[in-house]
Length: 183
Length: 432
Image (tube, rainbow over all chains, first blue to last red; front, side):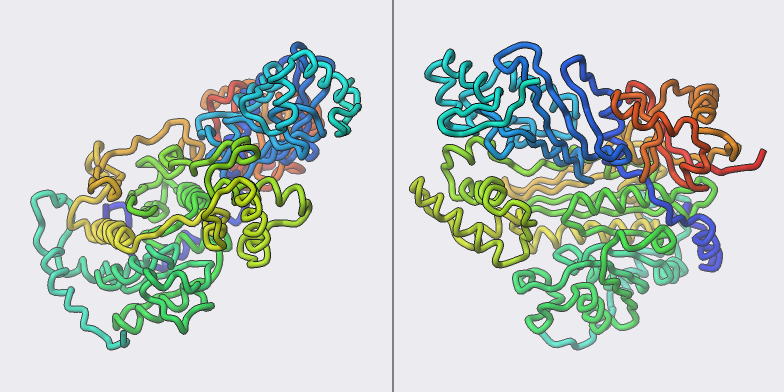
């Protein structure tokens, strides 16, 4: 091991330090990983991304236009905030509209297992967007974040569907007014 | 405890170790009393002056190291005193590194400890270049990743002094680990990222609908109630008013669901993710880290990551919570590691080139051959062929001159279209 150091005196080290050191900013591991994830992203025709600041790939908006299921005809957007601890930490994802959905609360919090308890660094952004897409195809009454919506889905699927349509048009459901998300 | 200086009588034992090779000592090791002088000349950096840091500073000083530096950004809290034994009640509120340095200097004559009160990110490569060994006693993954990337990024193949062995200790309750990273030669901390168990999280819907434990009520107050009621207020987990607010909300919720056990200190523990620290685990892990430093410095015995053995172990884990178990193994380097998988290579480019011309050049060069590359610097997204919106936003850069986008010597990362390969380059501009 000693061999990898020349045991010569410090002057030489000082010279090397002056020559080799750099204050220039380096690309962070989180940026590199997001760059890799973005190039693997399969958005298809129902999703798009928008970068408010194109130089900042750690913050962006994902828009989903479901083409089947109960939420067809709506347009839903999610903010993605990724920190420098990614992929150890999951991205922070919030729905930007107030919508009627059993797994999304009125503040936009999303109950999706891989965003919290089941997140693993091997998962990527693609897994997250597939998960979000799935929430619109199969809203899940077993993991409620909006208890009223989950209750409606459980007790009467048809009336839940009607509520979804009313809420997407900007109407009221159970005295709560929702954002208009129809295109 | 007083501060009576003690004689460093360990030196007799040290002399024995550095003059008598053992059965596994490398034949290339030049052992002898000069080795001790080398040891005294070496500069060691300890990152963190907390639970592990106190142990490390004490151990290094007693093992013959004389020139020790320490960085820490924290001040002493009363809750540290049970295990961070270099601190006394009167020190509460002072920077950890300053107090720790003075204490060890007083107790071990002849040792110089240079403290720096601040963040590791305050310092640049010039600073880290002066050390021969860096030992981390950190509690955050983010800081580990930063120092790891810095140390790997400093490697210059033509300069043996630029390889800085990094020893990383970590503990959590009764569990701990000690590992050695020889930058670019063994697996780095980024290669091992998935070895860190993620924090156990409770599903959001459980918090929102059916809390069962006091922790669920606290997490609800932390994640949901704060957002709803104090939107725009940044939560500061060190602000007692903020913790009190969360505590009251959590308590109300717990009462609503007939749950007992929500207390102020539990609230603080959950919100700040405080993991019980056990003094003896710190002692075990720090002892192991210090011994690795001593072996790296003197070559008296093979260290973790020993270069003469391609199969050498690099990672020692210690588990004390279900009986007692240690296991030492080789963590394999990841070829696609974003930090040590590729090092930034210097690339000469004509300063009149546009980004588009540069990308064509990259596709043509035999060593890169990347088609449709994604390319960025720390500050700028230079060109992203996908997703479509980012392509549109970065397309205008293609016609710009490289010199308008990138500074001379700045690092850039180039990823191929399916994300499988990433190269890092430092551009050097030339006029022809």
